[in-house]
Length: 305
Image (cartoon, rainbow, N blue to C red):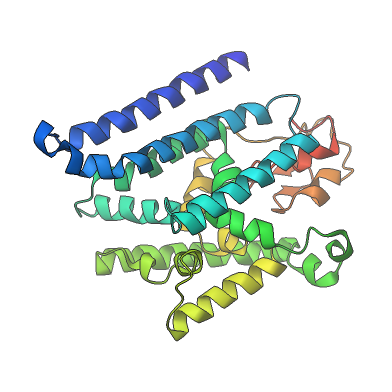
């Protein structure tokens, strides 16, 4: 475990350094135009992105520590989610947006010219997900934060309500995953056919964060997003987010960092299964939709590794 942590730290720092080098190499900056250059205008965003990647690595290390699942860690998670929603959401208008990064990466592969900073963060996030797990989704994503913080099903008086329980069943989870796959394929087809960043035109988070909802379609999407987020834990993440689906697939690669249950010792008490907000735990198995929120570890069950 110690060797894996050291490797994670070295690789993470190397990726962060490479991301800065890529940005510097892409545009040669002359001393005369340095103050007005693209790089100087983008530098604050670049710094913010790299800080986020450092946080992903630190969170992953903490989730492997004795503090994982503690009350302090759960409070810290909600503080980070709230900060992400406020700063990356309402202050920066939803940027950086991991879905846009995914979209730009696809368009780049199709031959479209993009500045490297528009899609390289997504590539780095793929590597970090393999090394650190889906800490970005569970702790820092502003899109997930908005859904997470307004979900009503966590309140004790509503938790056992049949309506909220309906969306937590295995059948409901399978249906939402099927919808996500169909939406992913549809978005890929649109990107291939249209050859343009089509998702940005229907992004309800962008309109909501910028408080600039206009047109019947956007109003409908925003209302659907809010209402569904009140009843379902992270509905957008489960039914549409293409970046989330890709990160799910990364989690299936052999050697990827994932929370596991000691199946040989598991007593099938189902405490962790009931605690998991993503409904990612089934019997003695944690599936690839786990977002490393640490809720299952708050049960203090010693058979979760």
